[in-house]
Amino acid sequence: MKSNKQMKTFKDLTFKEHHLDSKGKKAEMYFPNGYGISVVRFKIGMLASYTSSDNTDWEVAVLKENEIYYTSEITDDVIGFQSNKEVTEIMKKIQKLNN
Image 1: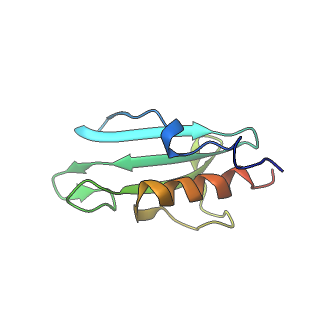
Image 2: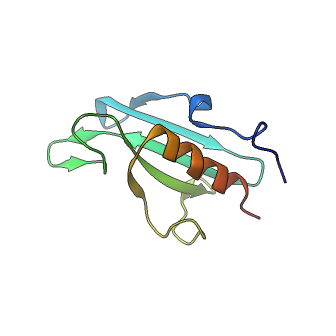
């Protein structure tokens, strides 16, 4: 098992403009175990990520094979309203998943 020092955290994410919202942000990262994380914040009319209006939190999804993975032991859906610290904790859990 990896030590926490080797694990990727929120600060390792590289955010880009969200393809649906020029003010939105999106980052994806994959880990050696084949799983990944998607971290987003966006708003398009009535469609929006599960985030607060003050842009201080994130919507997170577990990824596998370039798609949202709905059957992980972490969650069966996206996880909304996550702080930077909470994103890091989810990233650590994802990195510990077995293939």
